[in-house]
Length: 567
Image 1 (cartoon, helix red, strand yellow):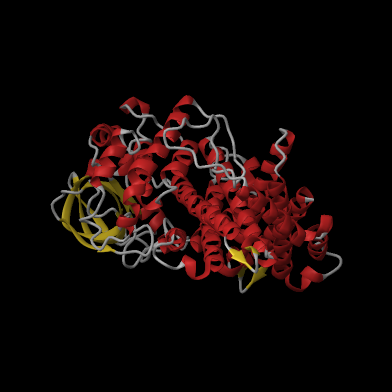
Image 2: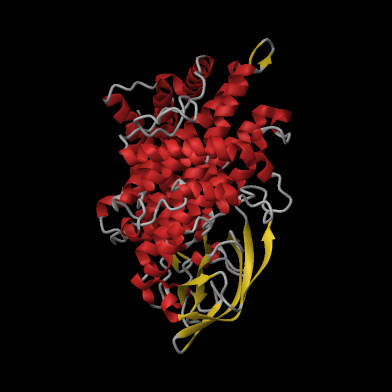
């Protein structure tokens, strides 16, 4: 049933993308209209998420792993995704969408039928909740931090069926190290840090130093510079353990992973030799990316590419230096990061795609001054601040890539890192909700046996399992360079939006118990709300996905060079 649902969903998306590429309204193709582009992106994201969980469920059944909750969730997610995709297709086709001679209306009718096979999706939701409730009553005690890591990587606990792959010895060691560090070092200080009234003064330098000595800060340092050069799948293994107590503390470490990866892949040998050994050896060396400005945030990634839009912090060539002037804000870990990846406008006569460059700027550069630290509702100790340049002179050799018009931004790594934290937050909220609803009695029976509550918990579980599976698939394909950016962007969008929905649903089930400061649920919700807006907002990612759909429908090849990566 799920496979048939995904087949018709794909057919509906294929037909809609081709139609939007050809249909002209207002003098331009309708795929160029932002509302249409966003709708197409939503269809694509739902399709990729559904296909990911379908393949995972099929693989587990093939290998003798019968997980009734997972297969039920797969059927619910895939059939409802197909309904939504087909309905959107009908809407985008307009009057043509309901004509009998075109297939759009049939896709929609068939999707409705699939959702009601086997007892219907309502029954599947109730069955899923019953399985989760039964598992809660048999829940074993949590493993001690000193227990050895399991042979298989799992996302994560027995309440959520594991996504497994056989780990290397190095990955098992990192998983165990991260778990023990999270319990022994992060748990005792997490609540105090979250309530801090002075983020700079309370920054956990001792925690950072201890984690650094364990290798948690230098995970992506290349082997040739004495590091483990961990791939992004290893990031997921570590983030699951490092972030399960507090994603804010964990994010300080993983921020360094993606920036050392960026430096290793796009920095010149001069820059790699200058900064990577110093970073490796200094336990307090943190890095930060600086692209957001008061007048340019996620919209700097939009494809209008105009000279008067996007990044405006200027970098003017002066001999063997560049002179930087302007302001940045919402810069992670400013002013404590020792090395800043600063995006600047090197040519204002052209658009951002060729007129923007990235410089490596040490914190102690003359002409660089730091301003306010922003106090966010979530991820509080992973703070953002602002800084400005006043005729700061930066050596020309500090250009990333050694040339103008190149930023070296690693969007896939940013997408995957944020998506991993979204999964951790949503997982924590779901597990707490299952436990709460199993323990609390209403009308003489556990709350989870109420059909409305059971259906809500089943929806939370179903969405999280689908999002997690898409993330792991996207990460593996990114590590293997077997996909374009559409999968990692889809994973970031899906996981962060699911995290918000799961946390808000959890708050509804907890009621007044969820909004008191003593409850972890309010923190899960605050952290989840911060994630969709980081490293390009979700609408911006959807617009970029739609641009890829446009290119594919026109027969162009995705950026990582394989037309098979289209689906």
